[in-house]
Length: 134
Image 1: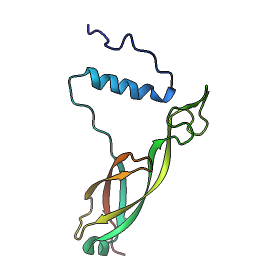
Image 2: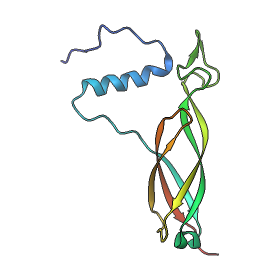
Image 3: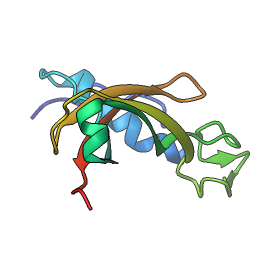
Image 4: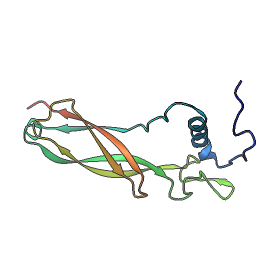
C-alpha cells in the first residue's frame, strides 16, 4: 500500500477547488504523463460554395472561465456563490472567427486555440459540415 504524500497537508475548504486539488495530487503522485485538457467541440455549417472557395466565418461558443463574482472560489465569504452556484465557473460567450481553407471536405476537423478575457488558452476543435446544395 502506497503512503499518501499529502496526509499532513491542510484541508482546502473552497468547494470549487476540490476536484482541481485531487487532479493535481494524482498528477503529482502518479508516474504517468498528465492528462491533456479536453477541447471544446463545435460544428460549423458551410455552403458548398464556401467549402470550395474558402471563407472566414463567425462561430459563437460558450467558454468556461472562473466566476467573475467569486473569482473561482465557489463562495463569497462563508456563503455559496449565487452567480456560479458554488461551482467556481461561469460560461462566457465567445465569438471565434474560423478560417475555412479552400477545398475543405465535409467532416474536416480544424483545431485552434481561443483565449478567454482572463487570458486562459482553450483548445477548440471545429468540425466542418458542408450542407447539401438546394
